[in-house]
Amino acid sequence: MLVRRVNGAIIRARITETEAYIGERDKACHASRGRTVRTAIMYEKAGTAYVYLIYGMHWCLNIVTERENFPAAVLIRGIEQDGKRISGPGRVCKALGIDKKFNGAYLIGNRKLWLEHPLGSLTSKFKIGRGPRIGVDYAGAWVRKPWRFQLQ
Image (tube, rainbow, N blue to C red; front, top):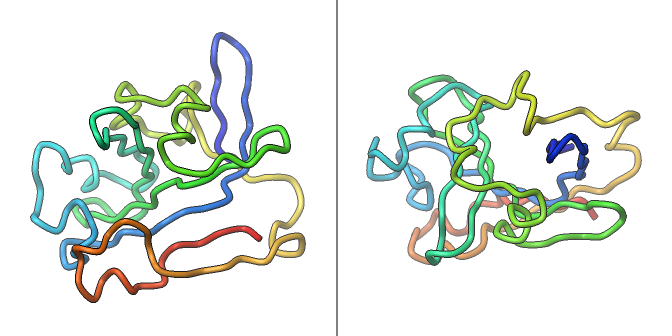
């Protein structure tokens, strides 16, 4: 669950779709050209938010997943909030009010945006589908990595 506190209200959203990006060798990963001002957050500790703007108008939330100095993150592509599916990383951030102020925020113990384990076991309720990542046609063989995951 991705949880956001807005003006004292708590919004809980089940994460329903993600994509993984792992390391400088991954040509689809923002860190494929090494550490830059933009990608420095990806080299932080696991649990750090990497938020960036695409097309000059949509915020995207990634969560760093590996040890410090190894750039890997998971893009949050879809959520379910109040029974409604929201698909697309820009729509996810819009629904939860996530923007650049969260870039670099550590999500463990954070009081405005954090991850929470849902009650019960997800694996018994959902099938997890996997497939190639979306929108990374420029990445050569890396585009075919089955690193996009969806709850079905």
